[in-house]
Image: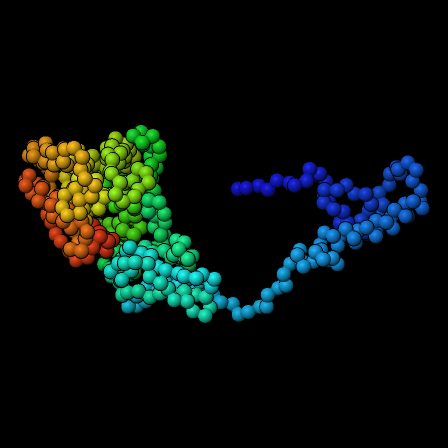
Amino acid sequence: MRVATNQSTDTRMAKPGNFPGEPATHPPVGEPPVPGPQPAGSSPRRRRDGGRLRLLVAPLLLALLTGHGSGAEAVTSPPPPRAAGPFRPPPRSPEVTGERRLVFRLQAPRAGEVRLQSSDLQGAGVRQPMELDKDTNGVWSLTVGPVPPGAYRYRFLLDGLPVVDPQNPAVSESNDTVWSLVHVPGSEWFDLREVPHGAVAAVWYRSGTLQRLRRMHVYTPPGYEKGSEQYPVLYLLHGATDSDASWSTVGRAGVILDNLIAAGRARPMIVVMPHGHTGPFRFGMRFTDEFERDFLNDLLPEVERRYRVRSDRAHRAIAGLSMGGMQTLNLLMERPEAFSAAGVFSSGVFGLGARSGPPVQGPSWEEQHQRSLTDPELRKGFRTLWFATGREDFLLETSRATVELFNKHGWPVTYKETDGGHTWNNWRDYLVEFVPLLFP
């Protein structure tokens, strides 16, 4: 809490009739004079003349300070009060209608342009920032949809400046910014229901690999804090530009796990959601192995030290979307004996397929991981390598080429193509399908 410092070094309390910080030179009106020695050479007449002078000077000084009675009045006096008008409550935003349409509103009477930005609403036509319309009260609005049940991130561009919705407290973090978040109900698995609930916590740990503190989000199932049971663990990785908070906010991972466990479709488990970026990110940059080294050397041992997780292969799985899918495959090849299942959502080996990314320098990914790919002994106890990608996804060909690569080497691959593109609408569905396959 910031504490204001005194502007005056005088510690005496100013009394009415004296200026703050100045010693009292005469008694305020209504108080008796303070007895004491008189200054040398003073006389009653001089004191009376001095009193008259002070009575003349005080109003002049007051006028100088306040501006009244001088040309300074137009500059220093407060503006006249505005005429009272009818109270207008702030606009409601966002509004979710019964038809699952989304109405966005922003009160910005002085703005020249307001647009809506949302990569999650591509299916609703928001492929580029869309203009809002302004009414006579200075409220901008836009209606989109209908949209499928789920969660959607968005923000406004106010004359080009990105801002969150001031009427919506729900947000979702990405790697370097924050988005407003709206939930559209109507899903069996994404809606908050009256079932036993687990908890999602933000957890900090020390990374010796990166020499700094790092954050992860961890889901613990209902009843974890009251028992002593050990649980299987799923490591769930996000995509490029997102953060460790993404799966539990826009991804609804905690809600999905609660509902699957309550329905008997999934075993109670711990879900660890790491931060996949190790610094600023931009598309086109080369990926390093910093995350994988942090995961194996720091994050995984920290989870097994801090939480009651079962540390054998049969009770450990990993999955990720987009960038996180590539990291999942890297970790699987680095430690193939560590996981019993892996899920790859809208991803594959970057460098394969039509959208290959930056050119590969040196040995190919297949050549780098030849032993892990080909040694059948390393696959003993591994149950499923599960891929899913949308037919409109820009990484569709990468996914297909990666599935072909693993099939060639005899891995137990399951692959499905769905409608849609590179969006959370698909990734939430994929999580609902993948989790029940784990830990039979």
